[in-house]
Image 1 (cartoon, rainbow, N blue to C red):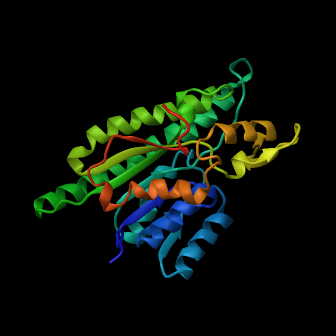
Image 2 (tube, rainbow, N blue to C red):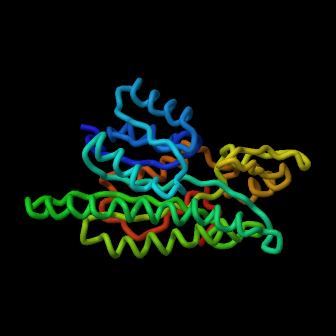
Image 3 (cartoon, rainbow, N blue to C red):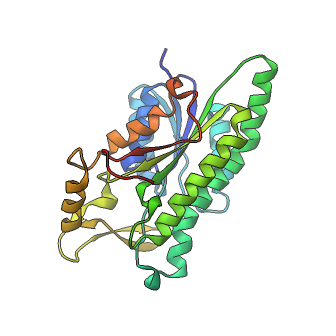
Amino acid sequence: MKKLEDKVALVTGAGRGIGREVALQLAAYGAKVVVNDLDAAPAEEVVAEIVAAGGQAVACTGSVTAADFAERFIKTALQSYGGIDIIINNAGYTWDNVIQKLTDEQWYAILDCHLTAPFRILRAAQPVISAAAKAEAAQGREVLRKVVNISSIAAGGNPGQVNYAAAKSGILGLTKTLAKEWGRLKVNVNALAFGHIETRLTVPFAGKDSATVEIEGRQIKVGISEALAEQSKSMIPLGRPGTPREAAGAVVMLCLPEADYVSGQTLICGGAFGSI
């Protein structure tokens, strides 16, 4: 029996990068996965890959910041698989600037995506998890559920990322609080703080020619300069950035039965670089 067989996992931002790897690895362990992405095509591709490998998955596309998203996400899991066992709040991006140049739009966009959206998803999931936990307790069964909220070593402060740092720091407070609120419901709530992981958001670029991605109608510059990439690499004791597969492995590790007594913690996945 696979370690996560019959578990239902919800993963935001799972069409690309780290989220994609998380969804694939959870499915490999036997979980039924609800795959979210802002865009339909990458989400459906991940679903198809999971199904082709013999797993089960459905897509729930759209922006995590939409007012109705949280309820729709939870409803998709219930209608498709009848429950919720694992929630991974992974969706995110960066929209950087120094504070004197940072607009209200940039501030709220990043906080809405990285902090408000996870809050709404977890709030929407609470009645479902609570009812299941009470029913299981009445039967004399202990069933552990998992929440992993994605943070960053930037939560400790990073020049040019006051919005991102604030959101990722807020996720740590949300995680610690919910671990205490939901302990009675047998839910492990942890945070995973990434260091430098190679994704489309951290691709090195020369000069001022950074790439852009379209997010909710906005063209957002992404990537880091080649000089910063080299500097970052030199500061990482393991000598290189992490891969999406390695980053996802750290997330999935917190979802396995071996982590059943780990809750309210922040694990840093940064190759020995970074602290919070």
